[in-house]
Length: 296
Image (cartoon, rainbow, N blue to C red; front, side, top):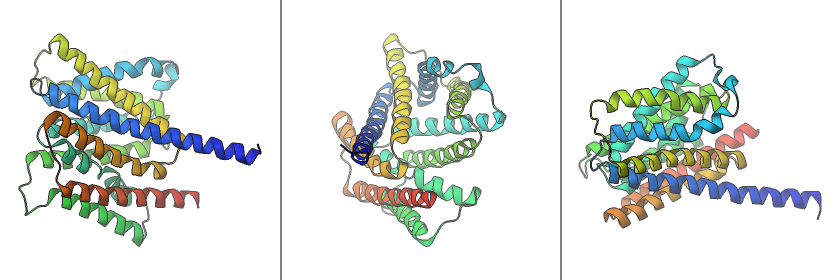
């Protein structure tokens, strides 16, 4: 076997493994959302956010601390704090939205986040964008409108919360993009989780209900799924470019629709699929175009 053949086989293996991790990330999130819906029948979504972040941090802490105290070093503590606060709001609005609307609808709207990150990079990071990427952004926005269909149905509070999640998630990702230029990724994860815990606790204190032992178990599972999902996402990005993985996000919609039907008897209408395909097509093109520009 030649060196070129071995390299090609290694790349194919990495590509398949990256797809597996990306699909696993989507599956873990979707299952976690079902658990959130179930636990939220008695415990407020705000409190679930606190416990999910706390248990998620505890799961990650041993691996983070293996890098030594130097991992805590940062010159951008304020940016880390702002990112933690913004991401706390994003998870809080998302968990609340999951209790107020069908799982597939919420999942489809959540797919808009990468497009909003690109739009934010244009405005705040002064990134230049050509007409084709503008068209892709417009297609994604149109896909969101197809899902919401304003004027044809009432826009519920759940939809507004899902859209708020997209906005706050995009801001958090833009801050992460800014931090990546100067900060170690592990340091960023550490401070993200550390600052999210007190922010979520303050919000949860207003709606606090002591969980039962069984609910503590499910809250720990939510936290473990958050950490495992993050790990799967980071592994997929280590093995393949984000442009190759973006289409896998469509499996998130399939997971959402399947689990929503199985656990809550929710049947997504055809417009959810049409809008979801439009958004995924747009995000895939934008991701591949940005990857091509970076290579050039």
